[in-house]
Amino acid sequence: MSLELRGITKRFGALVANESIDLAVADGEIHAILGENGAGKSTLMNIVYGLLSPDEGTISVDGKIVDIQSPLDALAAGIGMVHQHFMLIPVFTVAENIVLGHEKTKGPGLLDLATAREEILRVSAEFNFDIDPDALVEDLPVGLQQRVEIIRALIYDAKVLILDEPTAVLTPQETDELLRNMKKLKEGGTSIVFITHKLREVREAADKITIIRRGKVVGTASPSASQEELASLMVGRPVSLDVDKKAPELGKVMLDVKNLNISDHTGRNLVKNVSFELRTGEVLAVAGVQGNGQSELAEAIVGLQEHVHGTISLDGVDITKSSVRDALHSGIAFVPESREEDGLIASFSIEENLILDLHDLPPYAKGPVISPSIVSQEAQKRVAEFDIRAQSAKDPASSLSGGNKQKVVLARELSRPVKLVVASQPTRGLDVGSIEFVHERIIAERDSGRAVLLFSTELDEVSALADRIAVMYRGEFIAIVPATTSREDLGLLMAGVKP
Image (cartoon, rainbow, N blue to C red; front, side):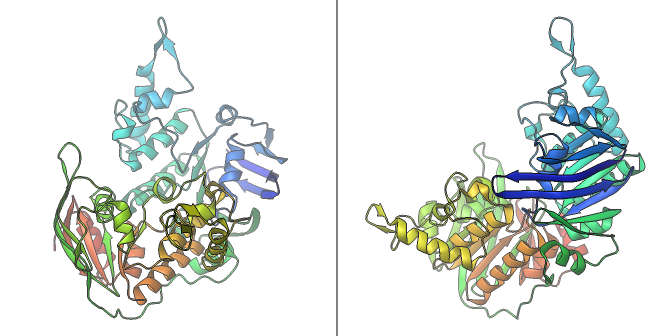
């Protein structure tokens, strides 16, 4: 089934999110839409799926103009969508999530889940999804939750499938599996609109690429285009995809972790006997498949875990039992895994978010009173230094794109005296321009003599930034290896294969 957009325009007040966009997706084609965060990609697809209404323009399916006012209209037209942030109810089963909004009953008001189970098993078998219809969604890993979303679209006979940043929360292995399944769907006649900013995936999976920048289509490309060409089209300037760094100048031990064990409230071990040292002027990257204890280790260092045994020392001082406030004030900068949940308060202004951990300290406060003028002055400096793109620093953080939200977090954490930077998935969901910026800042911190502990599931990022790499598997450091270790060897270690 083909999809065609003509002259799609969408405004939010003075902001033009989409401007006269033309797009044609051929029958049985994987069509990638490439662009920076905030370029207007998701807005455009939310229009196609009926979550937003265009101010101008038309949508055609198989050459016929369709009026899409809701997701039900989109599904009726054969269009399905898998959102970047999944639209699943965690406490429902897979089957219950699938029938939600399309409930069928048998007898006096009883849900007909048997038919849904059969369809889930059929689609799962066809694409090797291995989904249990009766599993609770909250018990499924992120990669399987995404498969549930895809199954739901296919069960309701979507012939055009929109995937919005589908690999943003996937491991490298899950990403490769998704790309294989996309090709299977294409072979079965499904047209796919693939929204992303990851260049390797675009070149591997897409038949055609459309680039959107600041709400406009700025060009099309074939998958044979180089990564540098695609990156330049995305951001409107040459982009360096290589990290430029000199040999490390190691100093004293800044972070010393010994025999660290972390358990959850049931007593189950999440981190087991982890020991390591990190020196100033060094980046130690912790690699591994998501869910092997990396999050808990990062949180323990900044006081966010309760059941911690062992010792964590910062610059010779035991901080194992420190509160989050004390840990931050002792000299730790923390870039959390989720900027949305843990890095920002969405309803607060940008300038308020920039002082979340400093609001009661000079120069922002005198006693209990905050100085609004100084807060605004300092915010303007940070906005300029970190290239935070916003209409005003008084705008809520929720108004920013993902890349600019991350820049706010970085600006807050790196604009105060710190000894250790703990960065957890710092480029997750960011475009190449924002990734370049984040990488440069991390290396700048290392070169200024700070110790950097980096947690990342992106192997290319780990290899580019690290001076040493610790691979975590089932809560343990399975090995600490040089940054020159091959991707293949790292992949084996991540799977638990010891050298």
